Length: 521
Image (cartoon, rainbow, N blue to C red; front, side, top):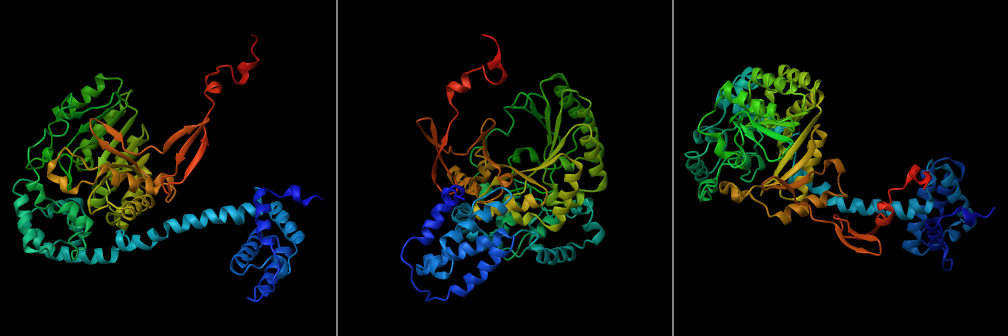
């Protein structure tokens, strides 16, 4: 038998490395371990036993210059074990490929991600990890606000006891006097609202807590206001309650209400001074607009927050859309599952499932930090995910909240584990000067998002976009050049450049392919 013909280049390279050079005595005591591993590799049917042996031999060679021959393993025997390894493996993976190539790739990947795994729990803990402390916060807030457990666990109770004034905020958070003064200055012009549940996610000892920064306004909102720009959608609202940029997608801004008001709210001009229920005529006009344009296939119901709509209104709107043959997809924009998960009751789930059975319903949420995912919000998303076709997240890149690889990667992995698909990362909009202090440079966002490629699951990586007359992708191109029919690509996670053979343009342009080749000329 010609063993050499059965070995691939990787295995030949491994054996040449192990057996090249003069033999020397084993002064480091590798021999006994090698003999023990050799017995297992020869007698058993475990691929891993063979791999472990050769990884050990490779380490001995690198550390002490020892060849396997002086440790009791002739090259011919090593060849036999290499062939045995390949024969045992279901995919005929070679020993050299596994020991020299795969092990090295895995080691490099592990080294890349090690610092992230060490830092994420400290730098960006999830609400699940902080749950014990959050429960203590909740108990304290219930006592301060005088809420019963029944009120706490109800959606109406969370809204009734919502924190909307600096005085109430002071009673539950130990903020510096100067900070409370600034909150009072801001709330003269802009609304503040935190549900007691969401307020409990704040770690009160930290002034840069990511939940605090999203929910408690600071003086920059007033100081940065400058010249007001037109309200978002003032220039693309062709009908009552309707926003439209694209030919087949429209948005119905069905309410101005939210359970909490974010300090980076894109629709800050639409919130108004008080919550409003819109008249039936407004919804009828929005639906009539959709009814008349048969090009529309995808309708997003948002606001405000779609889950703030009464069940009766939500059921009505979904039912009307389900009755339009040309509308094929419905989306609901909501932040409720992380701000007030008590809203996710069986009646809401039944409404979603009933409509989803007719045409797909997708819930689009906004989660900006892993700290917003608690056992309660995770359970809400789990239940929602069983009633709809998909739950998607649109995060906003925000200074101090998620503007690092560790924070964003942990956010994406955490929500993926909570039944939510990372979908978009928005660069924080330029349209509202009130929150320019929260904006992050585009290049920083690119580094964060592209750093996730090759390091976390592909379907946990969202698209990075900006809103400027529509959604525009911000990913930098990894196509660097073309050479002799090859494309030069750059791996975003390491900067390494690789050649990728492109399709032959002449072959692509030839229409006579497949069975057409056999047609008579």
